[in-house]
Length: 134
Image 1 (spheres, rainbow, N blue to C red):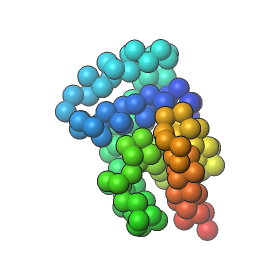
Image 2: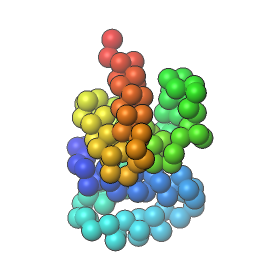
Image 3: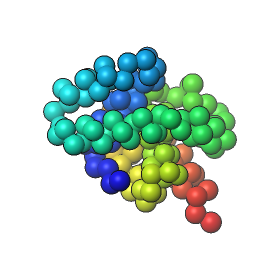
Image 4: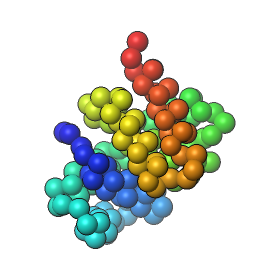
């Protein structure tokens, strides 16, 4: 499934909520996306992407810890760690070309993250990509 920026933006919003409060109320998370101002198709694609990326977060967290032992997941800003999880899923399991997933994550880091977020996200995902391609 091809994801666009709007769907990824919705996915990041949903993952942020999952991270902050868990998966106790999926309907509540879905309802918050209704006010995002994007199409229903983008919201649905984003929500589906978020739930899949969240399902595989333990795998992504483990790999990211190995690539960045000084910055374990629990020390990373919530936006950064969820962008990493999202792009990791897209690269490893979602069929998105690695460079496209990295570029999208960096653009979202510029929009939602801190000053150092784009560089941090880019560096770690570049390491993930290099592990994926021999």
